[in-house]
Image (cartoon, rainbow, N blue to C red):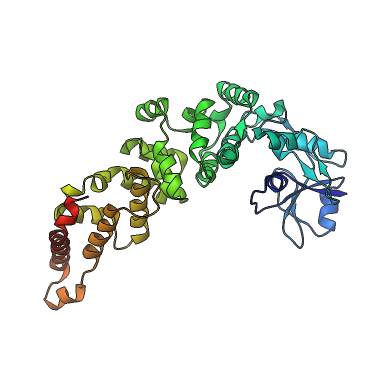
Amino acid sequence: MKTYLVGGAIRDQLLNFPYHEKDWVVVGSSPEEMIKQGYTPVGKDFPVFLHPNTHEEYALARTERKTAPGYKGFTFHTDKSVTLEDDLQRRDLTINAIAKADDGILIDPYRGQQDIIDRCLRHVSSAFSEDPVRVLRVARFAARYHHLGFSIATETITLMQNMVAQGETQHLVAERVWQEMQKALTEQHPEIFFTCLEKCYALSDLLPKTDGILKTLSQLNTTTLINAAKKSGDPLIRFSAFCYSFNLDDIDALCQHLTAPNEYRELAILAKKHDSIYLKPNDWNSEKLNAFFQQCDTLRKPERFQQLLDTWDSMLNKNSEQKESTDTTAHLLAAAEAYNNLDHQALIKQGFKKAELGNAIKQKRKEQVGLWLKTHQEHLRNL
């Protein structure tokens, strides 16, 4: 029995890139032997075990065979005859097919180290085309390492295009697409994820096929996402920036199709629906601002309101590079404070009850925002 550190940890060590997880491959063992040595089995599709002390994942070396369309259509073979080279050959990219032995020696049968030097994302073998998830993973790696100069090998792009043409990406389930997209939104250049998928014609397979979305994808413009990524690392803000090119109905359809969490959907819709508030401060009045603050639920969801302002700041301000909030954002925060800062007890002492109290609260909020506007008219004219 021999164990090897494999995959991402080796790749990122060679790139001097931060990593958080270690994956191990075990050669010359069996499930029974692993359990006997104290490892805990956790794999459903193939034997994976947790180390008794470190709790890191140890997988038995395996080969796989395609048996059906999609990313679940595989059977796996593990026994003591499977070599390390057999296991590495089934991996997606050469830079992920490097192993390190206990003595520190690197095993690199598919020239992954050279591709790291050349800054190239290249598939290991034709088996790459059997798993459509790899299209998403390559796009995500392209987004992660774009700032280091990495690009996708021409033959790998061609292979990905062929996979899309053969309908493989149509078998991807929404949850897996969202999982990879959400990870990509945290990378330094998330826009590369989308441009890569568009380049291999996969993006239209992964998003709902409404007329508006298909038209937008045919003229894909990631400028708002690029601007947002420069200023904020928040994936919710970046997702809202990506969605900004779509109309409200398409944003809703997109989020439902991807099974995106509600917090992503809500922020994306707010950013699109109310963008005129940010873009046209000269049109503010107490009626408009009160309706806006109510729909944003600034009182109960101040963090989301701040995310909304940060979204607009990162996408729509004249200098998207600046790290500070704009004057427009500062004024909206101050106006929201006037809206939120209400003394309910004072209204109750005045005798308001039930429905009358609710109407009095609305009226008082409107008055307070109106007063704030009156004292800041000069500043607003200069925005």
